[in-house]
Image (cartoon, rainbow over all chains, first blue to last red; front, side):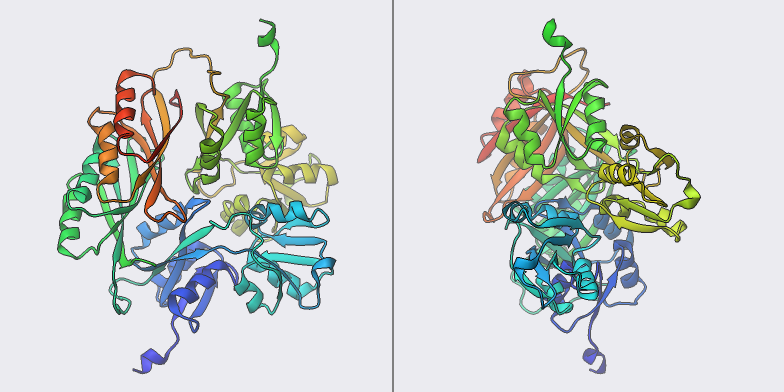
Length: 282
Length: 282
């Protein structure tokens, strides 16, 4: 009981106010105590060592594809996936509270964010772009230094955290920009289950590149009417005849049908790893 | 004959000296006349409009995954793939010729490049990092402004192009960092064929998300002993029951077996597009 009163701690990569922090609040509630880390590896290390209770990491983006580095960490650290969430990446023009839009002449942000707001810059040729190492970090910088006529591009969470003002909401070119995040725990520490309607399971496996290898592997799911919601091959460097696959399917690893499918799959794979079963996000 | 004397022109995204320019020289020889463009869309537009003869675009990276934006342009512009090449991404520390390594206190580059050289910065805590919008652009900037004690991180091609000096070669953390590039032409304009040992074909298709849909699609290849070298699913936003797939297989679209496989595949797909057949890279 006493332990339950403690706020949950969660590591994430980036500055305070990063999109990963927004995902952490969606996954763990507003009271989560977040621990920002400069690198993804540290996000995993802090959870593995017990410094934090949970970790939150991006795994794929609708415009930029899968985050292979985090798949590598999932394979190395054996920290199970407990939940998923899809977050729409909304870019906002953010300034110090005393600033007005008409005064803005320069905007700082991470180059990926700047490149996702090109229409905004085309519509406002008087505004110059400057790169910064992090979206939330650019808000932190303008709030600390208060350079005149300068704004940042970042999440609403970053504006709130640093006490900054949103001058224009949602200036991104493409609204179909979503990032999928995973919530990780240490093995054995399950999330409370509530009423889960549908489960999803993530796995990784390697196959030798012979014709029909993937087809045989897929049969383990198709013959049992299990739906795949993701499949991706990744060439293994230095092993030109072996491929690493990521797959997600609808089902829970320990239900009887999934169990039989995973046993069947492992007749064909060279290596296999269960990354976790978790409630399918809405 | 006269036409052959003209240098081939090729559009690419980035500044002169970018990794895409290096790929263009590998694909088209040292005499290619390159046309840098700020955005990927413009790279495709210039080829479609006939302003250039060829285009060179990155399509996937071993650390960062597929470049979905360029898959979208391939689907929209119908410019066929003619060749592929895999380029190892080597990051070099680059300065003006008068500089020495001992004097360097600040390094400019694109944040992705900086993040791929973290061990270098850990080993040299006296050196500060600064973000810049482009790797090659950071070399251009230090050569124009000659700020004292400042270096850049970029390709050897960028150092050569701007007449800069490589202070340290290959400072990237992970040598398994490769980018795969496509060479594109306008429809009907084939590359000379020479002696091609093995062909590869890239396709994209959509399937409704019903159990076994991908399995049936894969059967078109497996039943004909055609090897898949890539498969990737991409959720279509706003169409939660439809998935876009990218696939590569060994074979040439117009050989009889491939043709039968592609006809068979199209019995299952909602939409299908041939992106091109090209010699498999070594």
